[in-house]
Length: 537
Ligand code: HEM
Image (cartoon, rainbow, N blue to C red; front, side, top):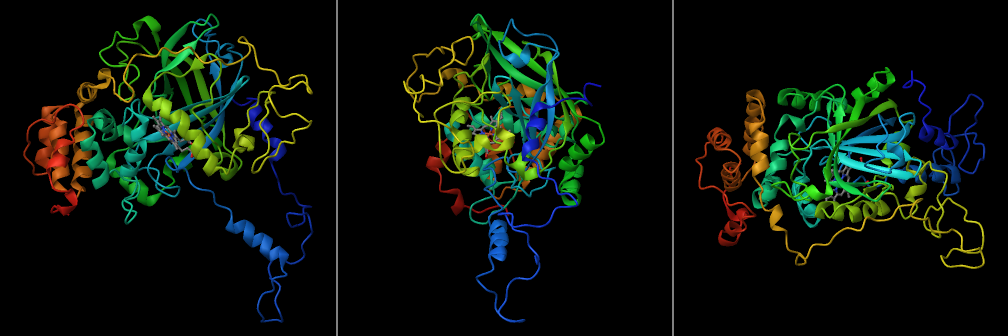
């Protein structure tokens, strides 16, 4: 079948880098020197101190000492697989991207699933958002769709991201709690930033404890642009729909699994692929005409909002199959560098202020994590398109040997090479409109923080609502400050009165007045610091 025989060009491109040990191999140093004794270091006498001369010992130990690289600042724990994407029908009417034109073409992909808050060694089945990052190795360069398993996000503006993440991560003084939403700091943040409310509903829902990676939906979250050959632009939201359907664990299972097998999701994905049960998703698109930008009662540029599928149906345009496990976790899963700025002609960004901040952050963080400006040369990150020419050179870990005298743009010595692409061949940024808003002011169209949270709650079945109530009760029950618990149940009144009452009752609280829409800083200013208050713990 096409799945079994998938000629994955990216997997093939890794072949020159693979090192396999064979029967005739003899142990050597990194310089190729054959080594007789790999088990005893050089010593002065039988029982004497070790000798500095022992270059083999020093090389072996030094390499070991330097094995680790920084873990990702978020999404540190993950698992990945190779596969392919195939479009059903040419999409030339909406995008000129090459990967969307030919149903007979398989575009290689590498997909990494992750949790967000926990460190590299944390458990798989914790209550958390899951990353769903797809690198398409297209004929026009790499396109990275770096999404999550929930369609909205906590904040509207990237400048709040470091604050948000600090509130989710273990607390700085004692590194507790790891990989859990049961934080004083998270709930403090959430109750100071009402724009988080919609996403918090998703986080307290069953979506935050997926049964398996192949049971997760994926979402690009932001509104992107599609551009066709004629230069016509439309807005788009990307979706991944799992062929096996969406399934979740129940909380009790999730907790027990975290203790009994912290690799539960990782192992399942690995074994599914080894057994030939290849996970599959369909790519969906919600396409909105440029002229319809303002017809919704929310802003398309606000990442805390979905476009309800009743308003704009999801068109299924292609499929993605994962059919090969990596050879080496570090070389592929750990070193893969997803960058939201990896884009191809026919797709473009919008003015979403969260998306705009991400365009800076990913490249920046990878310069640190992967040790400098040449991380695109790491095998898993290399594009498979047969071209990569520019005047960049040198830097730590540079592998390419740039031949010739010139490494500057405007040169006569080398016939001006390399030349820029023309508009038909290459990427040119969409001429985005700029609205006459004041610098730093949030658009009033981002002001509603609750309507879609209510919509989400109302769309749940009774058992799903029970799970949400139980999740709020469990997580808030771990929060030390009664005042934060109180603020949260008051905030929930803006979502639904019954939800707020049920959680408040479970926590032994009575409801106060509704919280105002917006970010209610006032009670911080007028009250003593929470640290001076009695805690519930
Ligand atoms: C990973 C920043 C929002 C999905 C990361 C990393 C950073 C980051 C620094 C680590 C990357 C690395 O070391 O390789 C940000 C910022 C955000 C933001 C600044 C908002 C301003 C989002 C949103 C999504 C998302 C909205 C989903 C749509 C992911 C995923 C990964 C990731 C899936 C893991 C990629 C992988 O598997 O290697 N993010 N992020 N992030 N982010 Fe974000």
